[in-house]
Length: 72
Image (tube, rainbow, N blue to C red; front, side, top):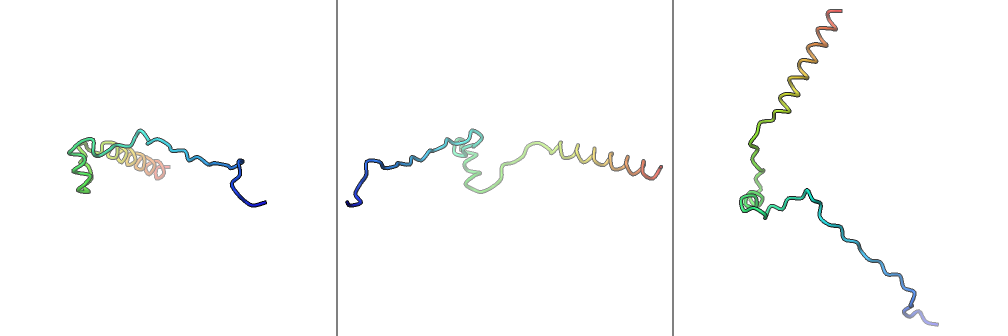
């Protein structure tokens, strides 16, 4: 008997997943696309308030621990 085509062949089907929702297409807006094509990062319009506030809290904690450690 030869090794011809068999009726019991296994067929693998590839599953294609959809794009994630958080992907933002730069071609949706002309200005965004031009910035994307130029390779420039988007401009940030607000100050890094979280970073400044976090640094201030960290400084207060470090100073407080230092005062507590040297006062004991």
